[in-house]
Amino acid sequence: MQAEVDQLCVVLVAPRNPLNIGAAARAMSNFGFLHLRVVNPYEVAFREARSAVGASQLLANAVEYKSLADAVADCTLVVGTTAVRHRELQHPLKRLEYAARVIRKQLGSGRVALLFGTEKFGLATKDLSHCHWLMRIPTREEHISMNLGQAVAVCLYELSRDSRAQRPKPEKVKRASAGEVERINGVLLEALRASGYVNPRAESLTEDKVRRLLRRLNLQTEDAELWLGMLRQMLWKIRGGGK
Image (cartoon, rainbow, N blue to C red; front, side):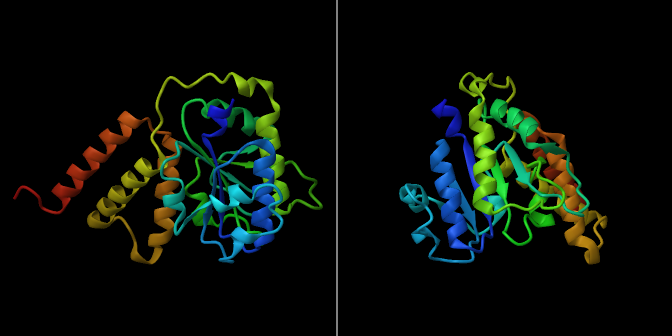
């Protein structure tokens, strides 16, 4: 099972409280998930969090990133967590128990990123655009938000509790990594700008929509290479190449 567990990365996006980061690290250590990635943590001294009881080494080994795109670049599946609230979601949403089954299956063939947002607001809309789909913990409507460390613990417990996780059936196809998809996203946006499709006043919104569209395609590695080649050729022609 350890080989599959090593394929999961817990990614904390802009966490504000070092004690919460420590609690998340402790939960990871409890269930044997050892790869923590942190994107733009608010507190630079988070590695010294006393709440990481028994997980000081895991916290010391946590990798910091300046952008979420970099943090998930080597992952073939990116799953965001959300309490939903009143926000309008643009992604498929799965309950934790069903989401865990899909994640366990994917762990047999590629790296998976499990995203948790900042304590106050959760994952921002731009963060969600990096996700293939979202999952939620089924809490009661009157009190839907959870402490960051508790949310990490509940999700990892669900992932580790099913004995079937010991014998995952790898997918036969190799999925494109988030980094490969992001490169396609960059070239596609360049082509859209060059063609005049992108309205400069709504460029950020268009970028998020395009990124979500590409995630929904769930591209295989071979398809990603083909897409990138085609888009680069189209961009070259749009810019007057070959004249």
